[in-house]
Image 1: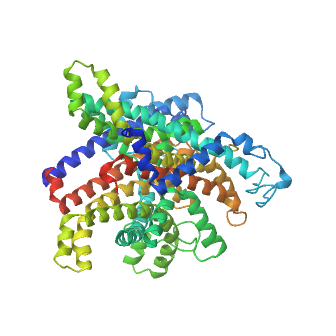
Image 2: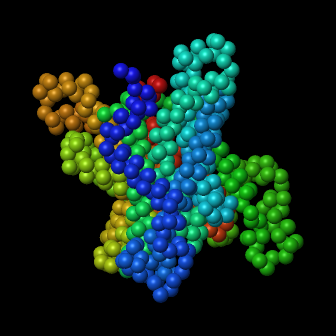
Length: 282
Length: 335
């Protein structure tokens, strides 16, 4: 009988994590909604139709309509694109930059490591939303600037994580062996160190996806991120805030979408951590 | 112990220098001339130039930064463009409201998160455990601003059970200032009507803000307790016939405490972030609201001041927690 490949082993273990599987299904559903938003949306997300103003959920508007008669379901579907893309963009940006810094610090060691880690300390000192708000405000309120701001406050986590991994890995036998047969630093980093930091990176990225979605929505809610009429979930809640008790659907559906999307990523993060980190496995 | 504290404080000074550099850099990239903004749209060009000179803005950035640090060391955070007051005076006015809200939220978080986390770990895989985990999952995934708006809508606008935004009713006079924390000052001066009013205003924002930290604490308490329950010394305690209460209280919880305490410190930083949104929703006149208004109006001396103070509080709390941690667990000191 053939031995299972690492991928098969991973999947075999992940399948046993029921809550993580539920999270994965939720995330896939949101990605499908985001990709097929133009097909799924019965209306133009920006199209105003005053006669439908504040229409309750029903056959015509599944999730109701907002004050300007815009279809909330269509806006939620397009909003999924914005939120998921925001998450992916920030994690990619922060993850790549942070990993590069962490890899460099951990591998170089000495004063370089010490200096780079003190720089991450400085970023960790700020409450993230206050720094993100200050950056977004300085650059000007827009979704793109909010993403840059959130990426700026997110990268140090990856730098610390990768650096910690590299510090352990660089002393391991397989790295020492590679060095002894004359492998260059660049080859050791690319072939041996980086692939071995991927598991914790994946877990962290999964948790951070949810955090980023919430942070971007929070910035948009207070006016420093996406701007109206963009169908971003935080903007939608901000626009519907005065109707929260009279026309609940204006804020409920964007909030519940955010809850499911973020919870989905958190559950997958939990599952990945249990599967990929044997020390924490139940 | 003294060396440990000194080392932590030295690190704090370095972090603060870096923080000041970062806030200075932020002010440099704002596409607004602080002198022109401060003087208003009717100011003549020569007036703006003169004011720029007066503020030292005509100097090269490194010189400006050195001047900025020198002023900081004297406790001078500059003057707010919007309020036209020294930023430090504004912060002294706004900070107590945030401290009061954060402490109340932390109290809520500890009172809900720790006992619920303990119960969940003791009844592992039961309905209670599932409910607690769901509570934590929702807490970590729900947008805080929606919960805040909903709570305000239901308990203030609809049911009228609790008062609306702000720290006190408009008809109430704040208590004589001692700490700046209305509840504490009212208690110290025996001003019971104000105490009741301040508590009723504090309840909703503290519950909203505290819920999210409670979720984090619950998870940490549960996992920390579960880890300790699997230790050999717990098995030994059980084998020698100790009662469950003693095992949990004396062996499990006591050893599970350090990571919970660390989480309290870390969560405090996220409370300050959460306070930005909570204070905006509840019109709570604290640092978060001051920061939001300052960024909106591009009042960058104020933004620099508030980010600096916020960035000072977080590592300070963490340093205090680390010192506390080293008191509980001497191994930390050694390492």
